[in-house]
Image (cartoon, rainbow, N blue to C red; front, top):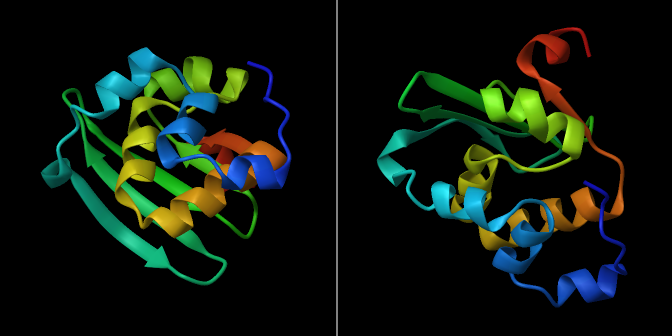
Length: 130
């Protein structure tokens, strides 16, 4: 998936849903909405440059997600992320759900940064050596 080209001003006018649509697709967004809030656990959340780490209980296993501001990296371990998300620069349902849950201001800042700058999309194993 090629990243859409927008100015920062154009992106700031968009809603969270519109930004998520630019980084994924309708099918994944629909699946994301089915993930319950009770299935999400915050492992850590830093308002400085560190970022966020979450655990999401899935139907097959528990998944880990990390939003690393400092290194501009998204790290995750689900099959969709490793098969397609990392390669196509496309968010999986787990990341979509997280961006729907975190504070709107932070979510919007991260999503705009994802669209304007280069971020690494990594699996958990890659991240350990990052």
